[in-house]
Image (cartoon, rainbow, N blue to C red; front, top):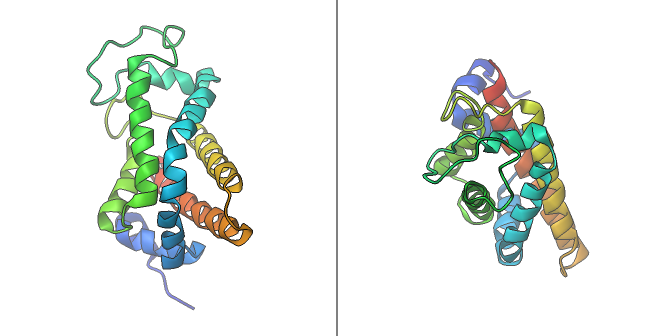
Length: 190
């Protein structure tokens, strides 16, 4: 039985990442599959981003978080969620962030810098970092991650690649998104 320092899981990001990836089984082969998918998934990212924002616009419980000024956005902001349209410049700004995130998932090395980035994705959706008005409830983050996972799976299923390659890609992305979900959820343990 491998001994795990449970306190260190909470205090050492690298230790936590290593533990979760090992437990889930996310390995170098999976990372190679994810990176190998960049060529075919990369061009589909804009459509995936639009689908995510279409879904977010469907619910008041998610759309309301796009009304306050987003960090780094300098333009005009709407007064209400009803005034915030899917083509508003602030939404275009946020779409750029999601696009870069998805592109980074399939291109960046999974080193300490990437682990810190994945962890930061969890932090920025809470009031502890950035705008305190943008404190996304965990239920909304879980729903979003489930939607993103399904969108990635649907994209992979629709690719014209061998069935075994589809299975490998779905499994690799599934493992990765569970790691990401852990690095989001850890910032909700208050």
